[in-house]
Image (tube, one colour):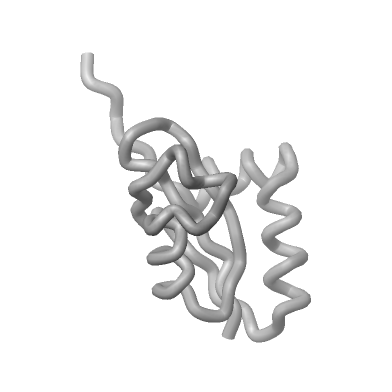
Length: 86
């Protein structure tokens, strides 16, 4: 299986979308600072993931979720958002 995963920074509003075949290992790599594009925003928590059978489908979904319509869909249907305190 391959996973498209959504990470949320615990120190900012930064979110990251990626794909992998080993989700636990990949999150550990992000939190260890081994990914240049996410290093400054760690630590991360896993917000959601989608499992698919093929690497090609995972790449396709990752690319979609990085588009405007994919971001909108994910925000509305997949990702969690905490209610802001008033």
